[in-house]
Length: 301
Image (cartoon, rainbow, N blue to C red):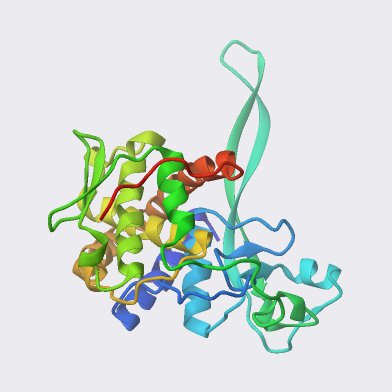
């Protein structure tokens, strides 16, 4: 299967999920259990999957009702002393493997070419196995308490140095002023709604900082908003914050996303990869300063 076929299959899976659900399927419910908290994670490395793999695994998990965040290959599961349950079907994800080869250039010199080749491999969720109960939801207990004023996000805003302002009735990121404008917290029906909106705008805030310029991209508006929505969902999941169930903002973009994905199989790959990069950039500030207390005020709202 070549790269175009792989992209087409994955894009079609996501399109099918969007059309069937009516709202983005990666909006996963919040779970306090560590095995269900956060992004889809590799059983072998303990690290979250990146880019399109993260998006694909969350979509599939939602489709089949998998609550565990853990995924592994057949061999990784076997090495863990477990087995895949009979009849379970694997999930195809992609891997970019570095390849090098020597060639003779026009001067007759031996040179080395390096490039990436897309390959696929298959993984299973922990809930598709027998013997991995320790990776299922309900086995482990939460390691901490999630506060109503979600300190994980508040700490991230301070650590990243975001210029966050409150007031008015609009939420937006101002590229010219380089600040995020949010309505006051009490204007939102729920805390989840406030933080989901903030995470969306923080992804926009990250765009120029990770070198993402959508101005010259096809479907620039749809791409930018999908990146922000994916980034918000990834960020909320990584921080262990509850996702907002009100998806009115998302449904307004749905037709744009579907049109763009149907016209360009690379669209969703680019969006997922950019969103992952933005979230990694944001979280790098917390990981650098997670041992330091918050000493700045976020302002009254």
